[in-house]
Structure formats: structure tokens, C-alpha cells
Amino acid sequence: MGEILGFVALFLASAVIVVRSGIALSQSGDTLAEKTGLGRLWVGTIFLAIATSLPELVTSVSAVRLGAPKLAGGNVFGANMVNVVVLALLTLLFPQARVRPPGKDQRILGGAAVLLTGLAVAFVFFPLALGPVSGGSLLLLALYLLAMFWIYRVREPSSHGEEATAPPSLPLRRAWMIFSLGVLGILVGAPLLAYSADSLSELLGVSGTFLGVLAVSLVTTMPETSVTFGALRLGAQEMAMGNVYGSCAFNVIILAFADFFDRAPIFASLEEEHVLAGSGAVVLMLVGLVFLRARAARKLGTAQLLALLILAGWVGTLYFVFAYGK
Image (cartoon, one colour):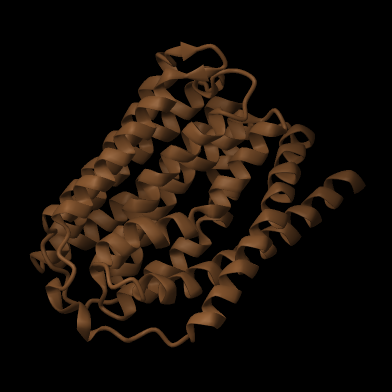
């Protein structure tokens, strides 16, 4: 019992470090991203999505290095589900905000996130092993880069009144300092988070996949939650969607990146539980896109129903992953 409490304390302490560092990343990253003068969707898709996904990246790589690829897979697919749940629920908190119909760049981003997640699920059955690395990982990396290049080409830097949003409040030098400290915190806290979660899964007899889908993903997605909340509060819908679906797309690439740290192709180490979690993520991401269209059309009743469906789908997926893991 004492050993379990010790690892619970370590998990909570490392979770606090990861969450606080991730929020620092998102706050300073907003300032650094805005200084580039790029469009908000591109900023959210690349700079903020990667910055806020750093907890998932370091946690998943640490899990793989500990010999716990199931925890890494659960973290990635679980984070994609949580991101969509957060986007839907937070959008409903701002009923006065005007949500515009998704533009071409947003449709490409949403489609890319769904496609990459769906392919990751398919690679569990067909890992396309190339020695110690999965050929699926290389394909995912190539498709991600292609999608980001396509979004960059069609982006609209000054559309939809981006200039109306609040300017960055942090001085540039201070933003870089906070960003660097946030990265350092992630590099310290995320490995401890993965280690404590892996140890707890063994001591409690709970599937590492389920622990990754639930507890670890909730912790590592806190930075995305803070960015999405701030963006919607300021009316920056493009940045909110770019952060959420950009993070979903990048999260899949985390699996591909972690593959290079595993002794065997990572997709060959994943199981049916990950298929359930990944399939749930794909469905929720698709419903999330429909939700945004309904919200843009001011169909608030339909949007509320879809938000509840997203929440119920997340809870249902958690139940099936837990039941299958038992």
C-alpha cells in the first residue's frame, strides 16, 4: 500500500510540473507565435500545437524508453479524444461568440488530423515493419509534412478580423525565458509522469493503455485546454481550432517519433485496446467537425446535442477500453 501511495504522490507531483510548464509554454508561445505575423490557423497548427503537445511527446518517448509502448499509444489516442471534448465544451461556454464556417485551410487541417489518426489505427493491424521501425511511421511523417505545407500555401493571414484580437502582453525576451523554463519543466516532469504511470499500472493491475487514455492524457492535454480557452475567449476561433486539430495531427506524429526509440516497430506493440481508443478518437474528431459547422450555422440546439454526444462518446470509449483491458 505504501508503495502505491508513493507512486501516486510522484504521479501527482509530476502532473503539477507538467501542467504548469505546459501552460507556461502556451502563454509564452502565443506571444512568440504572434510576433511571426503568420495567420492564426497556421500559428495554432504549428507553433502552439507543437508547443502544447510537448508534454505528450516527452511522456510518450519516456514511456517507450521504459518499455511501455502501450502507455504511449493510450496517451496519444486519449489526448486526441480529450482535445475534441474540450473544444466542444468550451465553445458552448461562449454562446455569444461568432463561430464562422470553416475555411479551406481549416477543412484541410481537420481532414488531415482525422486521416492521420485513422491510419495510425490501421497500422496496428498492418505495421509495415522495416527492421526495428514501422513503415507506417515514415508514411505518417511524410503525410503530416505534406498537409502542413498545403495548409501554409492556402492560409489566409489577415482574414476574419484577426487584427481585432488582443495583442500579446509579454515582452519578447520574457516570453523566450518563460518558454525555455516551460521546456525544462516538461523535460523533468514528463519522464517522471511516464515512470509513475507505468509503475501504477503494474501495481494496480490496470491496463497501461487505459491509464494512458484516461489519467495521463488528461494531464498532458491541460496546455491545449488553456490555449483553447484563451483563444475562444478572445474570439480567435481559427487559433482554437488550429491548436486542437493541429495538436491531434501532431500527436499521431509523436507515435511515429517514439517509434525510433523503441526496440521494435511501435505499431506492432499496440493492441485491440488501442484500436478502440483510436477509433473513438476518429469518431469524436469527425463529430467535432460537424459540431463546428452546426455552431457556425447558429444551430445552438443541434450544437448542444452534438457536444453531449461527444462527451458521451468519450465516456463510452473509456469504459470499453477499461473493460477490454480487464
